[in-house]
Length: 317
Image (cartoon, rainbow, N blue to C red; front, side, top):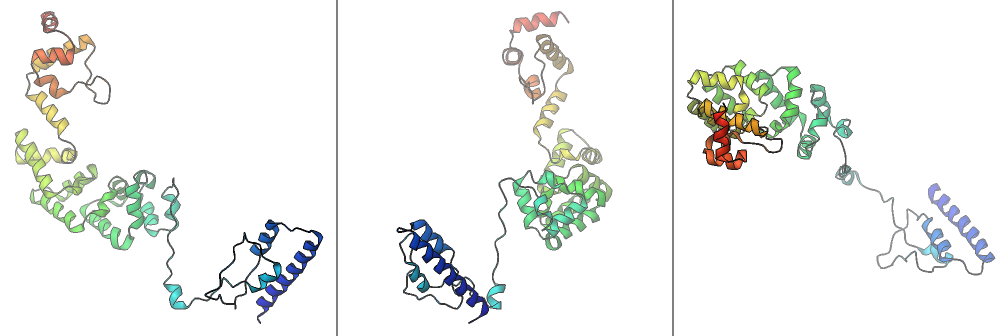
């Protein structure tokens, strides 16, 4: 018998002797004391559990003498090397509230992104983005995107701010990104101009060639610009290619509208205290509706006044 087993049996016998001595002092030992004695026992490593023997419940009455016959639970059963290397521990689940900083010490990818200047505190506000970064491998998934951006003209000190805003670029196919750059080059955008546009509109390369082509065509047609002027416009304001067209369309309707008509209505709304064109504030007045509706609807729905009041006000100008 090994020295460890000898020690366990000696400890068990000493404990049983002590328990029997205490039980002789009390006529009715409590079930709690018996349960406590059972829970402190360590089974022998060399014992094997018979297949047909049932382990008694801790809540059942059991004489101390019967504890010697309990089957072993074999907690220290040896594991072969082949079995050991196949054991994969599940990663710990993140708490309800966590930060990516909690994972930096255990993730080479996050460490290198921090070194590049990526602000993890902004990315972790988007759970899907945090999950994306935790799944990425730096060498396989990130390095090629970084090399692509550097070849495009994004400087090292610009990579961090760019990736903080457009972390989704890591989910893009590299060949698709190259195709979009090639399209812009086919429209005679220089490499420096493309780099400037990507820096100022980080999501530019996330849009398909079809969308980029439609946007360029829209501004050239609606603003009646030449090819060169269209190119100069989007280089200076590249977010025209990535943002919503609704504000642009509203402003364009104002610019095709006669100036004196806009001025008259604006002054009337100012007189009434209703000239509020900020969409983030109450009582917002849409510029589209402001210039496109006839006087009757303008007075009734926007100015909340009668047409007669509007005409009287115009006579005072």
